Image (cartoon, rainbow, N blue to C red; front, side, top):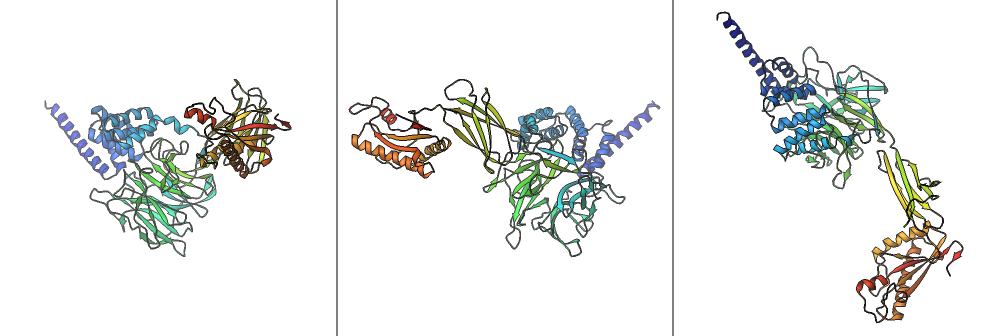
Length: 629
């Protein structure tokens, strides 16, 4: 027994020491000193498992971007006792960051079974189910990391002078470090571009912007003389925290001084002690300021807000609303003209933060579009800025394991037009059909004759307007208007023509040509059908038509003849006003003389039978030199 007692005492001391160290790790975690907390957890938990500390360990590793270790601790805690909905949701986010989307989907489904109202889980579950959609056109962008030297990390680029204003993270100094990850505090720096492959070592910007804690992200006014930037909430060298021991971010403005430094720093009017405000973006005219904040009124975590300048100061913050903001976090807004780019942990998402784009629509915004891979990855992607043409730009991403600046450019989309010709009412395709594609900007034509399969594929150019015409001997030519404006991804458009054979004497009934009772003026709806006739006449300049109007048998014979003639002339006059050569069309009213059924004078008929006789028709009079007899 005397030999066993020291062992028991030693075990008790070790257990007590482990409990003390876990308590210290928990305290470090709760004050967001994630690097210190994670190190202790990794050392103690394998031999002294504690479920509550495992969950904190998972959260610490998740904040540090160590997703494999985060997944390990979520799984370990889940093995001891099933995770609650919020922990399961965080586990799913980690699994998405590891590209384990099927497992993440199962986890999110469990969350929704417990909490069907969990909107963020609904968004990410949809993302897992639609995973392949993010890779539907990976050729749209090309992305490459910039070799910016001398820093541990860099993100949120802003074009400035001959380079970029960026947020930099350096190795920690001897005197202090960021407890979040034991690296240096963030600061605003300038790096100059020599070539895309050669950048200067970033230097902190001169003046009073950078201080003892975090600075950045930022945005510059159009004239480069005003800087809006994000900063930790501190006074002199003391970090300010709220009742929960959390230090929030604030927004500030600085002005460019005559010596090139930044000074005259002023706080944003809507900063708060209990919430964060940061990540500024500025409209081109400088009168609308966008920012991210979790201030009261936010829909989830952090939302995108904006303020408008009334000439004397910034108006009250306006939440951009539920089209943009979600139950997740929306951050890093940027503007290209009036187009909004931002990052979100929700919406349709590959994992982490994804970059989305939204366009103004009336008083609101279009549904945000995820830019897909390779702009977005399973890691955090944010801070996208475009050049003035929208053809290239910069973004931030930790896809390589640390926050880095990446350059991207857009590749012209491959746009194809697949055309198929056939004969109306006949089986198979129509060979020897002439297809003419006209680019309306230059009026340049491309004409081909289809082979036996009646098909041809044209290559189109982006941002163009086209006309496509199909013609065949003995048939009525047809044409269509096409546009590639707004098409950014590889697209194959489909057009099918069913051409109609025509010979002298053929009649064609026009539907939807309406007149008020006892009148010959065209109703507005009738002009839509006649516009199609205008197009058909212009497409077939070798054909001359008769336009005829017919009435039913009710009313006097002479009256009906006069009324129908007036109606036919009304329609023909409209066609002439739209540019149809008056020599190519003849107006004629037949009254009730040519019914399509037996409804003549004295015959009782239904309204539908009378309606069939009240019609407008075209008859082919000439094809080239051939005339009807």
